[in-house]
Amino acid sequence: MHKNIFKIELENSQLIVNYKPREKIFLNLKLSDYHKQQIKNASKIGEVLVNEKSVYIPLIYEVNLIKPEKFVAIDVNENNIAFVSSDGKFGKIVTGVKELKVGYAEKRKKIQKIRNKRRREKLLKKYKEREQNRTKDVLHKISKFIAENFKGYGIIMEDLKCLRRTANRKVKKLNKYNHKIQKIGVNNKFMKFRLNSFPFRKIQFYIQYKSLFNGSPLYFVNPKNTSKICFRCGGLINSSKNCSNCGLDRDINACLNLLKMWGLPPPESLFNANMALPLTKKDEEKVEDLSGRGNGGSYRYGCIFDVHKNYNFYNYSIG
Image (cartoon, rainbow, N blue to C red; front, side, top):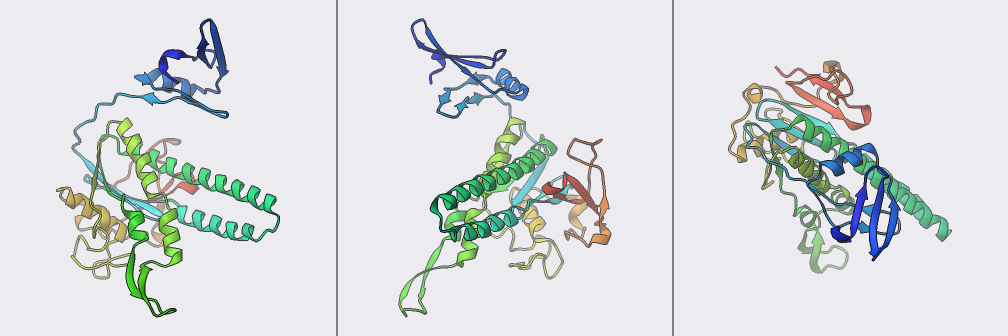
């Protein structure tokens, strides 16, 4: 719908469409105070899309990107998101998306056994929407946390556009069942399901647009060997969680390599630190809530953030 034929009245929460000369259509909108404020702050309003259920109003903002003096590297993993900043902040955000995806996959298996087609399709649709909503909720919380706590930083992330292609890659091998040379997948069925179902690019997109909205620029680098080669000792980490030589955490190591690839020196406060997360339960010490719901706080050391536990952070001594 072109912008010349509609008008939005925020006071009455209505969309007025000039249907014909001297004829108008009034659509009642469910606008909260947040929606009204966003519409007021927008520089421009794009072409409105109306269907049977919803009205889509695209908002255009003009944002001045700053030239950052500090940077933060973010490594997106299957069940956590690790970050290391150039001023010495580092930690992991526990997402729980892996367990969520696997749990709903098991539910779908059980539902597929139901003989009643109508009931089966109804349940599949129900749990599909529930899985999508829960996943979006987690990703929005994580991206909001990163965008707000690293406002003014330059954000460095891996370029994961070819991840699906890598997960589904096939090579020519001997098929042990028919004894023929043919293309066989490198990863097994369960691994391909995990890699294809996790929304790597979606979480990066959420971080990207929320950070750009705050004026923080983003940079994408080649992810090759960022997790495999140890930043500290140069050894191979492979599939283990920590470096077998120096104990450096695999995900924190990837962030340090991302900073290095962007030409940044390692944070001085972390250079000689152990940086092995998570530590044992006895080393945990609860600190102030960083979500903004409490009195606020700051952190200088590694922290574990669980979106399912009301934004509780734990401070780990690494000195």
